[in-house]
Length: 496
Ligand code: FAD
Image (cartoon, rainbow, N blue to C red; front, side, top):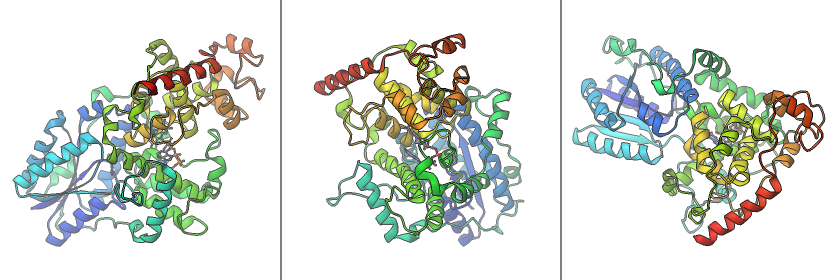
């Protein structure tokens, strides 16, 4: 007999609710705990998982395997070619291992929930209990509603309730202990499982040798690294977060999103430690204090997950605000390519897109600017941008990415009307005032020291430098494209 924990987006042993419950169950019955991770190439394809993210997942699994082995717990990792056969393969493994109870942490996207529903049925047919545990969010989706019990889709009132709930229920932030060394896991029972190797990335997600080497230095894997990064951020930078968070060149944010997406760090751990490090040790919606502001940003992750749970049709290419379904988009692949290549002629947008291509990451302010530029200035369907981001982000997360795109294209969880349109030149001047971020990612403009010229070389007397270095002219006139977007959005709303 055994108990199984199935790892998904929770690649850690620390503060992992599902894993903890599985280990407690194994301990109670004095039977082995077996862990597994199933690699599904079809899911990677269907969900557009970026190769850099797949590589990060696999490297995290190596650390996890090692950490579990220290506790004499095996981690079985295998590739399941057809995603439809995941439930049947899981059942086969349960039969081989004599599993009586399977634990996992819930993933809330529609495909995943359907798969888990199939598993509940399959397990109950064989007398195996299946527990899907709510661990992804700090406050479980569904808990926070307005006073009449309806779900909220405006962030500020939702966030106030989120803080109040956690202040009233502080134990929700208590950590779940690391599994104990289980005497039933002798290592002799399943020696093959201890020997099992972590497979290579599926072919379609391969990185070049050079990129693999680059990313393993740029993005060290594993939960130890994640916790170190968290401690460093809380000690060194959280105090100033409210001032530095919008400056892409300032190193003012935590860059913990790859770890939160892979689950090498629990959101609960992050909020608990940030609250403990904060001056008043309470959760508040104070936007002027660094820790509170940072916890508030982290709460966005819960917020967008809650949106996904209440309005799951966002998984089917529909905007949250359905009345925005009829906007007539420009079908211009040449423009889309200029945007993806970082050759729009708007230096801040190009810097952002090149940061993404080079690192698999983009600063939040730049994500908003790049997304707004695609949806509003180019009037290209925001879903194409959403997909492009997923295909390239190391922290790609459906709920947060969809939420960010919905916000930027004015059809998501945002009370503002569609006429908020970012001016890329003003945004650039405000948030990259010295042009350091642009100079870093757009080397063609690196020699321009002028504060105005760096944001708008063709408009501010630096056309020759830009031209000589092969930097393109702006592909659109912002004022004209703004007017066009306003008309097109208005017409689209009129059609719904
Ligand atoms: P910090 O500022 O240090 O924040 C800490 C953590 O809070 C982040 O790691 C993240 O988990 C969470 N967080 C912060 N801001 C947000 C937000 N607006 N929405 C949701 N969670 C947030 N975030 C992702 O994790 N995955 C995505 O695929 C993703 N796509 C985005 C697409 C667009 C168009 C936009 C505008 C935003 C997107 N975000 C996404 C949110 C945000 O940009 C990143 O979470 C943030 O830049 C990560 O950097 P950080 O860890 O330094 O953030």
